[in-house]
Image (tube, rainbow, N blue to C red; front, side, top):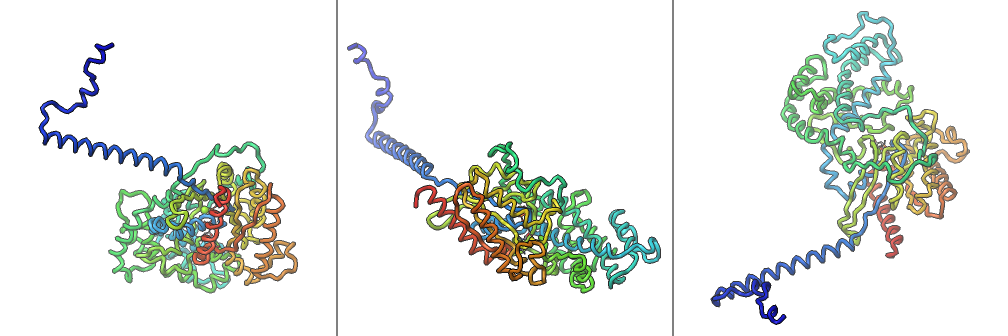
Length: 520
Ligand SMILES: Nc1nc2c(ncn2[C@@H]2O[C@H](COP(=O)(O)OP(=O)(O)OP(=O)(O)O)[C@@H](O)[C@H]2O)c(=O)[nH]1
Ligand SMILES: [Mg+2]
């Protein structure tokens, strides 16, 4: 035992200063040791602070946007982006150009479809067939539809027929843009539409079981065209000097546009080519939209592009320009369908909630996509439910036997009565008030579609009040436990008015969340 104590301790031996250390060496060694100690203490402090911050970190507030297709959910997300994440809004803005071009072209081709039906086949293949060379057209379908335009009716004249002929290349542009942007750009409705609220009629749904979240949101569609917009504007700058010489797409100009296509090996349809054709068709698109005879035909057929999604015809000249860059308002009004469930992150930079993260989930509203909602119900703080109240006289695209307002009401009732959502704050946006106003002003009567409306005045304030009351009654009657009714009359394409409402909603959700967390 005494021998063991007498033996040199290997640890202290290792820490001992070297033998024969000079005073200068000793000073240097002690300085180095002090510095090492300081660094080690700093690291310890940092680790402690990080641990503390992790403990204190506020959990994100999660908000789910619900409502039928075209109710305005994604447009509401854009309003949140404008208010709280403007830099990410700006980053995406240029990429919306292709979507806006597609929206514009689709309005024109839908009008062309209606007008084409107005011409009947009287003399197929006679002298009135297309004045343009057959090889001008890109494919057989286009040739067929042209040859059918052989007579005139209802005030439509030969000049209208010529206009339609010159606009034919837009059909190919539409197909190419749809192909480039992917499934979200299509408004195609699948026949197997499903019920209003699939989770309410089935017991097989379990929270989070099938959750598939795309963090990128509409970015996946926009990313396909990102960068190409920049290339397009560079190219457009180059050719804009020559713009006065570019005629509407008669054979010569279209072939010139085709030649302008970047690379013969590039088999991908591309947005640059689309914008060349669109620019070349600008005057004809404008002429078609402004033509009183055409408007009368559309009116008779009950077609109102100005009340539909992605309406840009009033801005055709600006949007069809070579160097067009979307404005904030253009982006808000652009229509791109949501597929699946998309997550948007916001981090608040100012105020007492600085650093708080918000997750906003935007869902696809078509009936066939609603089964994907349920997995998000178990872990959510608030739901913003969008009910477009201008749709009282319209049918669901996915099931023509169902009135759109009726579908919203069924959906609201299902959301209110879902037990899993009993404690979730519900905020109702009675949306598209601007369209409601226009519709009633042109004489559409609510009571013709909603008999219970009775003889109340047929104006927007009274109709909105009545609809609000109906939604309120459902919430009170069907909620599993008592909860407040928060509602807003909105037109979410009006970014100024919506900014105020979005701020109120954000504050309301936050207050409710803090109250729940027993902080207030
Ligand atoms: N005039 C008018 N148009 C609106 C309003 N809200 C939305 N829109 C337009 O309606 C179209 C559809 O809006 P979205 O926000 O894409 O609809 P959504 O609910 O996300 O639709 P899905 O993604 O299919 O579920 C867009 O073109 C919007 O610009 C509104 O209050 N007034
Ligand atoms: Mg959407």
